[in-house]
Amino acid sequence: MLRWALIFAVVALVAGFLGFGGVAGAAAGVAKILFFLFVVGFLVFLALGVMAGKRLTGR
Image (cartoon, rainbow, N blue to C red; front, side, top):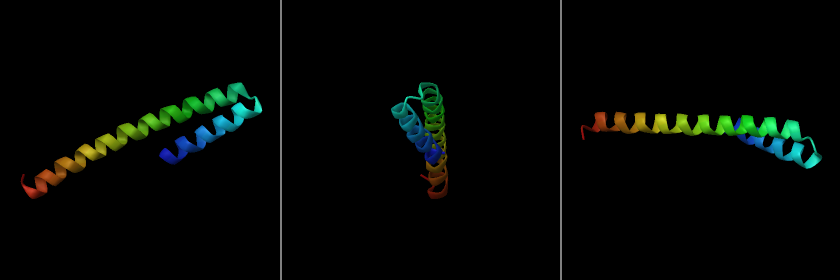
C-alpha cells in the first residue's frame, strides 16, 4: 500500500509540474488516503505483534 501511495505522489508531482491541476489534486488525495491507511494498518499490526509476543513469552 505504501508503494501505491508513493506512485500516486509521484504522479501528482509530475502532473502538477506539467500543469494538470485537477489530475495532480486527485492523485495527491488518493496518495494521502493510501498513506494514512498504511499507517493505521502498520499500527494495528504492531500492536497485535506486541500482544502476541507478550502472550508467547508470558510477560
